[in-house]
Length: 418
Ligand SMILES: *Cc1c(COP(=O)(O)O)cnc(C)c1O
Image (cartoon, rainbow, N blue to C red; front, side, top):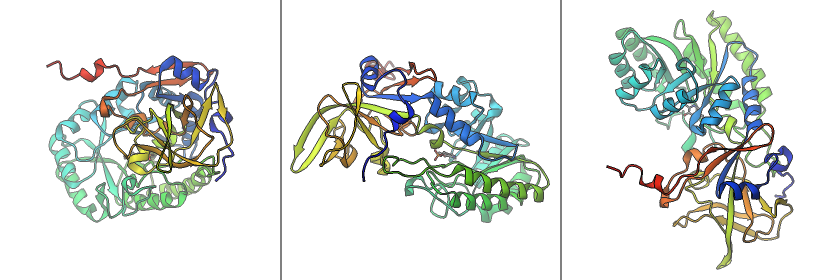
């Protein structure tokens, strides 16, 4: 596979500063985000369909940096939360309770109450949780997550519907759902699904949509149907991977939804829940090369990019493209040998990229890990008592600004002051 595209150069990703200067100023490793790209992705999804009653709920587990949340909100997105912590952060970012949708999965009554008490709508995803919600909030509104029996995704761990997953209520239980709604006088305002993550073709999504709509048809007077997230991004841009054709998907979707609404007789709202699509491509993870060595035939490039910083390659075997920077500029071309890029964590599996053909890499180089904005910082940890990196935003005007401080050694003592 030949390299023929340099993402950060084509997008002017770093604005007025270079990767070297960013590392000098804020330390290594470092998450860098580009505001214009984030806004652009929001606009694309907000324009997905022409049906007017349409909401985009950003699934903030992909990246919940407070400044990024403010930008996403300013673009007109609402948000999904999956935990009380996410609700807390969303309220701090300025989202109002009616802009937040809480999608619970095996949560305590206390957690449901945390959302309900703040005026936030809760979605339940089992009959047991529907009954529990009825017990604490009889007469209240509720949403139900169904599992349409169809799933999709890039890895079995992220397929979140279909016959082999824990999510949603099986569609065979619609009568039981109705009975519980009656018993607790609950008002079913919406139904939702999320079939999985990172689809690159519209087809499975459209099939999922048709299934959820056929379920929705069996409930009267809904306010909304939430079609889920999972919109994929091309992680192999250098290799020429094509983008998901949002325009084509949007056109088909609009047709399907408009027909359904006519039949249903009410112009309900439709929602989608993108996480990755909004956040992935606006983020690059920078790190430093400290050692290059040969171990029994494999060339290892040793960096500070351990799986405490970016876990996706280790958890999902994910592929992230890599750019090399030296003396303030991008190094182009490639050497004729493959290298394996590893981090500084004490585990052999601490590999960020295996057998890659890249420009020949030297000690002191800086690496840029592309498309790291989603499930990057969000999944980072203090494993090995390492400090989570700082996060920096390149604004629309090309200037850089710290939007989250690097952890300090003192942060590692938090919780021990008992
Ligand atoms: C994670 C998640 C999403 C977002 O998934 P992406 O693949 O990042 O778009 C949407 N909805 C629910 C319920 C989720 O759990």
